[in-house]
Amino acid sequence: MIIPTYNCAKYLEQTLKSVLLQDSGDDQMEIIVVDDCSTKDDPKSVVQNVAGSRVRFYQQKENVGKSRNYEYGIAKSKGYYIHLLHGDDVVKPGFYKEMNRLFELFPSAGAAFCHCIYINNQNSYIGESKILGEEAMLLKDFSKDIAKWQLIQPPCLVIKREVYETVGGYDRRLHYIEDWEYYVRCSLNYDFAYSPQPLAEYRIFPENSSSRSAKGGRRLKTLKKVLKIMDAYLPETLLKDIKSKRNQEVAQYCLDYIPKMVYTKDVKGFVLYSKTFFFRNRKPRLWLRWFRFVIQFKKFK
Image (cartoon, rainbow, N blue to C red; front, side):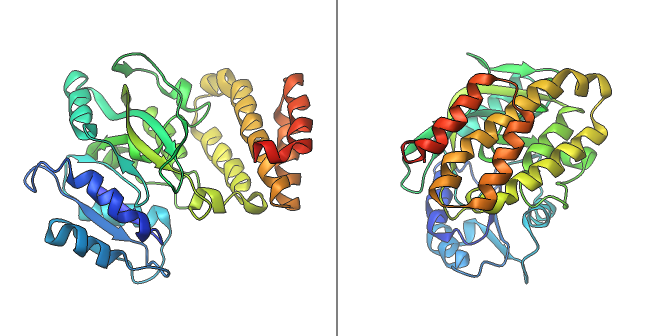
């Protein structure tokens, strides 16, 4: 498994410990930390203090961006399965056993993932991913669902190495949301296995990449680029089937950012998110919610 890091060392100890608690030995599990030239902390010392020589540590000589950092970590690894666990996320006890169980139950699957819990910088629950079923299952033709909207967060997912070798790596043109585009691409070639067990935690806090990218609508610009990239390779029949529902998902995504844009007085972000929301939304009740979010932004910030 590979832990990419960048200026998140204060969470790295918890991340490492969540993995080491499930350590099946270096003959069964390799653990690699690959740092993208952090400038605000020292992840190497955290690795040494928590794991000693059990974890291999690599550091980029200069910041190369998330996608290239992932690629570097994957190239350094040798495992049959690859798990990219960001340095501020957590896996719960039993995660790796459940992933192994999924691949044993559904050997044709190219990837396996579980239900995800969202936490903040205080480890408090703030939400969760959509539950796709009540029991473990093989998601055939998963592209019909994942192409509509992101249903997977990185800490939940384990991918067979052959998938990376066949599909290729993450798109270097994308600074954010590169994971969603990659999962869509994978789903066109491989089935996914799913478990409803909540065994991974995805952290959302003001300093992380997802939160920073919201400022000024930067994340929205990348989202439009992601949609354009996907539209270029998705089958026409699939694209026609999902386009309306995907537009509505994008509208809801933009709407959810409105209170934050108003609260932080991010005028540029507010305009961009609002413009995209009104362009894509087709549900009148959500237009009313937009006005409510603007007027009562403190309640929803």
